[in-house]
Image (cartoon, rainbow, N blue to C red; front, side):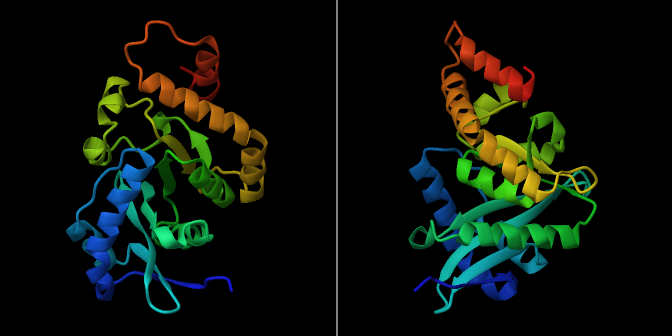
Length: 230
């Protein structure tokens, strides 16, 4: 029987799950070998109290997933951050359900804001595309210093700063309520170019993790020009 989940807007009654959520975020990042902007349990609790997070449970009441909202540039930008699904419920479709719930909450709470995200995963890129997000350059994201300061705890922060915040291991995606394609169009585009995105992400990681390489691969350079105009 397919697992069913209950996804709700988090509140003060869910604060006991904050430490579990933070621990799982860190463990997941280590398992993937990627960086993560760390958040404290107190920060997660604050998001819950503010009604700026969603939390998922199984029908039996076990914690299953989480995601929260952050705002930048005086509410002009919104980020759906910290998406995490408990290991035993991954590949169940729960991540997609959580993303939809927090996206809808963001649109309702900040209807004029641009919603963006940074991800190292192709699966999250696919989910974002289904919501109407598009891949963008870092220059189209918030330039709020507080946002970028949150990346300091990420293992890839040195890469970010060395590239003057123009590019890093993460791929940036944006939903602009005033200028966006419909989800059907962005989903179709993602499916059409998914292999190219995957190849690009591999090349990007190879380049950024080899800062002392003197010669750039010609094919890698062309892909960077296609996506980031570098």
